[in-house]
Length: 390
Ligand code: ATP
Image (cartoon, rainbow, N blue to C red; front, top):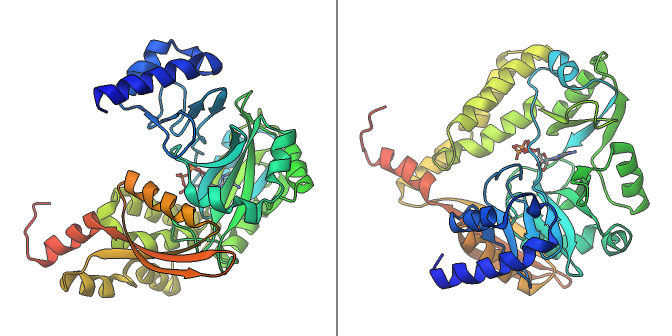
């Protein structure tokens, strides 16, 4: 940040600081230092100054947002168990609910300065979800009138979203918003599941499918649920204790989800930490073993297809000198949202090429390609005959 800009940002920080009780847990100088070191960054795209944490900082999670009289904690990471029988009773002591884990991306919707904004996991304003929430959560303004101190955590999921290439099999077009948590911003805690479910019902918010309560001693109904989700190619479950004080929230994913991840990740391996692949293989090994899912010809075929099914056309492309790219399609309500989405990708340093724009009446349909330079170099350097010591 250039010195003049840094001085301006520090000034904003000084104004925000006294109005944020959680910020005051640390001296102002610590926040100024975080700003200087790039750990705390200004949030762009809002009509007032705000800051987001780029990484976890002291006890504050990545993606925490601060503004005048506003504190939105980052969404916490959920520990994963690999084995249900030993993992669930290890962390959960009483009854719990199994919520469907929805495959999409996480946003936190909150009211700031009289307007509703969607924030991504990293604390950016999400231009897509900020534009589209009225289509799916029309009673959100009414909700925030009554509960201004809550944030609505949801998964934006479906084939037409700008960020992820996997989605629940039952969403055939566009997206939907699944509300899975309500976060109390004053207490910095989640609303207990049963209270949350009744609020979601009262405001007609779609929520993930919920099973339970189940008990940690009786794992077979959970195993049966996982097997059904696996057959239906759903992602998995997030387990939430009925009493949030009596255990941890846990996640567990299906074999189908791991295979789906491998399918969409392997062509782009140059963009990822290669451990991403190994983790999915380990989950597959342990999960299938526990649930008695066979390691047979059919599974080997599916695993092979997941890894290599799309590799040949990709290598053909790269060998012709074309970049590795992925096509996304989204519907937007407002033309301006497209500008904001493109600006968001520029800030996040994602290369985008707009391929199609069509007016659908109430929405515009936009198609764009994401170009992956690192994945392209990863494959191209090898195809060009470059040697490597490994
Ligand atoms: P993932 O586990 O999806 O690969 P991640 O590593 O970012 O991604 P975590 O940080 O462990 O995941 O959090 C799990 C994510 O699962 C949450 O961020 C949330 O977006 C998503 N999710 C989907 N359905 C639910 C649900 N019912 N309850 C809580 N989180 C859910």
